[in-house]
Image (cartoon, one colour):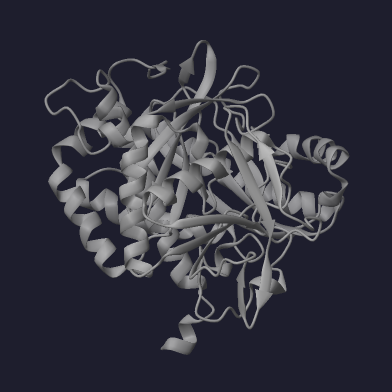
Length: 428
C-alpha cells in the first residue's frame, strides 16, 4: 500500500522521478564509485519528505531503532546486507553483542531488538544483548506481544574487552545513540569492533556537519543528472550557541530564520510555488524531537521560544541550533499525514515504512507520541523500478526515488564520519 500523493500528476517531483529513471545507469555507477572511496555507516535510517515539488531528507539516524516496523519481505534483503557488512569488517566474526538504549521498559523498542537479533542470527552470528545501564544488575527476560521473549544482560568489562557472562564478542553493535555522553566502559576497547564508532554518537555529532556534507553531495549529484540540487536539498543555516531564555540569543536565532526564509521564498518564486514557506528550528546536537519549532515568520520566534521553554526548561541554557528549510509532506494514508523512512545496512536499501500521524499537520514533525508505522517492502522495489511507466503512477518507481535520496543521505553520513573521525589525523 502506498499513500496518496496530494499533488497533480505533473510537476517537479514527477520530472525528478523521470530524470532518475532516465539516468539510472549513471546513478548506480556513481554510487558504486563512491563506495569504492568511502565506507558507509554500518546501518542508517533517513526520514524523507515529499512536498510534490521537492523531495529531501530531513533527518539521518546512525542508530535506527524501528527494525520491527519493516515488513517480513525485507528480511532476506537485510540478512544479505548484514552478511556483506560483517564480512567487510570482521570476516571471521562469530559473536555479536548488541548494546541497547538504557531504558528497557518499552516493548515496542524491545521488538526492534528482537528483529535485529533475528537478522544477525540469520547472517550466521551468535547474538546476545547487553546493557551498559547501571540500573541493570542481573539478566532480565521480557515477554513480547508476539509470543517472543528477549533477554538483556549486564555488560561486563575484562582486560579491555566487553561482553556478557560467558560471551566474548569480536563485534559490538550500538543501538544506543549515547546522547547523555560516552561511558568509559565503551572506550579504548582491545581488538573489538564497535559499530557505529563513538564519534557517530550524539555526544559529539552535529546536524550542521551532516547537512554541510549532504549539500556538497546534492550539488555533485545534481550536476550528474542535470537537476537543480535544491529539489533534493533542504537549505539550512548553522546558528551557533543561543539560549531560549536569553533575548539576545532569540534575536540571533530570529535573524537566521529571516535569512533562511528569504532564500526559500526566492526558490518558491522561481518555481511558481504558492505554498507559504516555513523553517524548522532544532538543536544541532540532539536526536530528540523536543524543542523543534516550526516558524513561518521570524516575529513568531519569541512566543514559540517561550512556549518551548515552558515544555523543556533546559533549553534556557546556551546550546547550538540550526535553522532548516521546512519540507512539507503531501502524502496521506487514511487521511493521516505520512512520510517515508528508508532503512539501510551497509550500502544497501533493505526496507522502509511510512510514519503517519493523524493529529499532525503537513508542516510538523511526525516523530511524536501518537505516530503509527505502516511497513513497506522497499527491498523488493528500490532496485527494480518499472521503466516506461508514466511518472507518479508506479509504486516501485516512487520507492526507487526514495531509495536514491536515502542513499545520498547515507553517503553524506559517510563523509561526515570521515571528517569527524578523531583517529584520522593520527593515521595520516
